[in-house]
Length: 167
Image 1 (cartoon, rainbow, N blue to C red):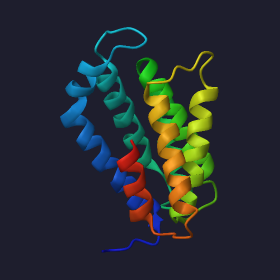
Image 2 (image 1 turned 30 degrees about the vertical axis):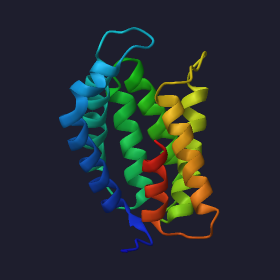
Image 3 (image 1 turned 120 degrees about the vertical axis):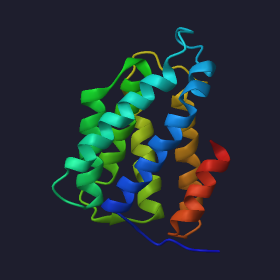
Image 4 (image 1 turned 120 degrees about the horizontal axis):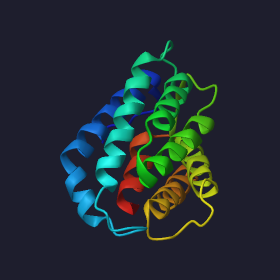
């Protein structure tokens, strides 16, 4: 199996482009799942608009380090946040950026730590966090990443596989 030891800022940006592309194809499915806090069917759309804003800012980043790209993405998400899901997503990106602070590139354990920070920021950003929402997904993804990183492997693919199988 292929192993990925580290991810640069440019690769991080490319990963989020892929995630945004996936969300473009799946936004209506996410909208259909939307039942909390109001079943208004716009969660996927709001997340997509927030992601697009995040991507625009990431492409303006003056540096290709993971830290600078993540900070730009967080700024773009905050500026372009739409609806509750967009605001929560912006907090997740803010936490991820804090977790990757001063990193030119990152390894699996760095990603696990950044996801833990992302989860903390998302929960702290709400006065009444509710389980069974995207908050639970980021928390469980963080726990899975931490568990995989604790095995001593810095391989990002194994950390990401643990995240995907949990989320």
